Amino acid sequence: MSHSEQFLGPSAAARRLGISTKALRHYEQRGLLTPVRSEAGWRTYGPTEMAQAAEIVALRALGLSLVQVERVREGEPGFLEPALASHQDVLEGRIRKLTETVERVRDLRADLARDGKPNIGELANLVGSAPEMSVTFDLPWPWGGERFELRDIKVLNYIIGPLFSGKTRLARSIAEALPDAAFLGLDRVIGRADEGGGRFKGDPSLTPCVDKTMSWLIGEGATECPALRALAVSLESRSAAILVIDMVEEGLDQASQEALISYLRLRGPDAAPLFLLTRSSAILDLACIGPNEAIILCPAKHSPPIRVAPYPGAPGYEAVATCLAPPEVRARTEGVVAWWAGSDEGR
Image (cartoon, rainbow, N blue to C red; front, side, top):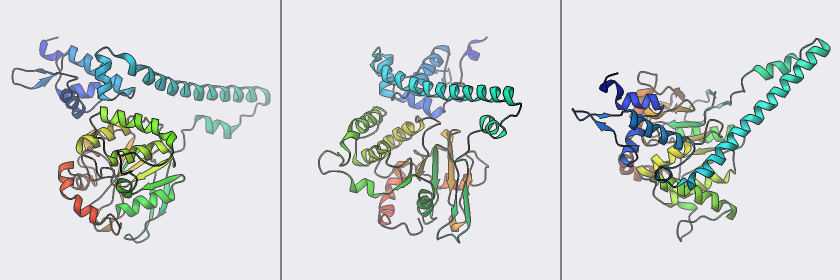
């Protein structure tokens, strides 16, 4: 194998690692990974860099922030114990489910041997896939009452559309139609902070969990602010199994948005669904959409909402891309959005 064949470009390296090129660049910016420059100045990743990157990816999969990853790699293993304990809980939960399934198979075999009649209903439940979560309702105004069905609800669901497309009304309808769901409006940003220090009123038993979440986010590069802590409180309170969050980026700078979406993606495939209204490309990065994520577009002129696949050429993809803007651009239009914060007419 030649020297050039041992070194991969960013795209090939990212594919092999199962991450995005943006993640690779982020590791570099944080000083965790230094690619080798080719004679032409291009970034390349050799065996040493790929091994380092794989180590970072593994630690991230355990739920460590970038600051925690850095400290572990520098010889501070203290963050590993709680991360490994949490991972062990997940694995043991899977083992319990598998053990229960084995017991059901054993019982079915015993029934078959004793009676010669299989329990078809139980057999269907055993070998069938888990039922998908779905919701069906009539679309509110500004639509015409069309029946809307959202099937195979993912862990992360992005609701997007141009101004006055009705996306907030759609989000409220989803929250009303789904069992044990709640709509988290923009009042979270201005209504929940105490005047001193950004702390929040509520259940004091949540404080350790919220502080832990905030510590992770800040370690990821987020900025401590009332808007971010309000989201942390809502995520940790679990007052509803499913949250539908209006303009999740409201009040957050770019680093905080990127830290937040990293945190939400680490919740795993078995986490309760979240619906995020957004128009920020830092929250909805089309190059980073995973299999447990979905995009719901509210088109202009009040056409019915549609599910959009995250690749160029897919129906609705260009419309989604047009709606998205970097945080600095979104900040320039914040006054326009804030003017409508008291009413969701047509949003």
